[in-house]
Structures are given as structure tokens and as C-alpha cells.
Length: 204
Image 1: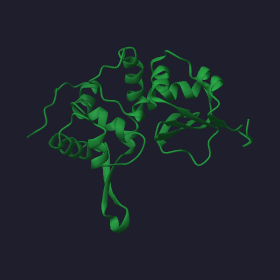
Image 2: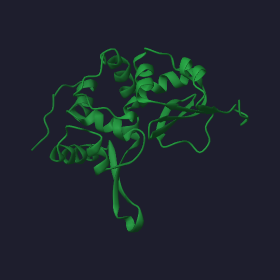
Image 3: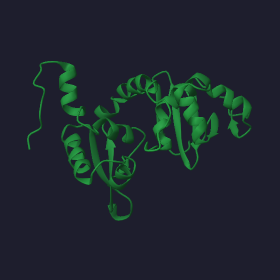
């Protein structure tokens, strides 16, 4: 079936022709921290059907937003990852995260949640503590790390090999920081379960 288009000669319209379909930006959110297998995407996009996921992956690949490659022993595993064009959508995700944070309110019993979904709003709080450097955040069994520098902030799967700061949060604390209910600095100052280094590599 041919894809529908707004047929507006407008940059916003053209962008929405590519990423405006339901699930597309959430798929980009999932891939913004690193490659994912099909099963990973399906598990972390509760509510999507296998048919829709497959169709969206195919369309975004055709549009140059993501690519797929073989990896693992005998190249038996297929992973999807963002292209440079796809990665350049991070500011869009950041802006939507800022705008949508005020809409979170209380979590409803029917709301799905994944720890890594807090990576975008937590990143802004982390950058206030560490304007330049590497920070690992653990939320339960999930871990991701931030690279913060003059070019902005990015987050990546897993802990960093060496981090200037390492934080351990539970889901409640992560939610409080993400929604602005509690400053991250308060948690760092009150919690002894974190590790940090100065930029010279010495513990502080």
C-alpha cells in the first residue's frame, strides 16, 4: 500500500511524512541508545503488533532513518540501528520529552514503564551535575551512560568503562527526577550508593 502523504510543500509536513506515523518516533527513541534486535523492540514497545513493527521498520529503513546489519556468531543475529539521519532526530526527542514531562502526572495502573524511558529527562538533570564528562546511571537492573560535552548529550546502552559519576536509582527516584519533583542533586547528596571521579580520574 502506498504511504499517505500530506502533500504539503512544507518542511514540517515532509518530516511528518517520514516519522509522523504512530510508533515511528517511539521506535527511534528505542534505537537512540544503540542497536536493537527485533525481539528487543517488540518487548519494549508494549501495544505494538508484530505486523506494524515489521512494516514500520521496513519503511524507516527505506527512508534512510535506520539500517540493519548482521552480528554475533556466524552473523546469525539481525540488529537495527539509527543512521546519521536517524540520530539527528535526538533534538526532536529531547524537545518532545521536555514538553511531555508536564503531562506525566501520576502513573496509572495500566501504564507500561521501562527504566530506559527515563534516559531523556534524566539526561537533562545529569548534565546540570556534570556539564562535561561521562555518567553511568543504574535503575534497577537497567544501566545506561551519558556522554556530555560541547556538542550536547547522548546516552548509550550499558555502563561506561570509566565514568566521572555513577548513580544507582530506584524507579521511584528516577520518576521523581524525571518529572522535576525532586532534584537529582538532592539524591546524590543524600545517597551514599554512588561513585564518582574528578576529571583527573581521582575519586572524590
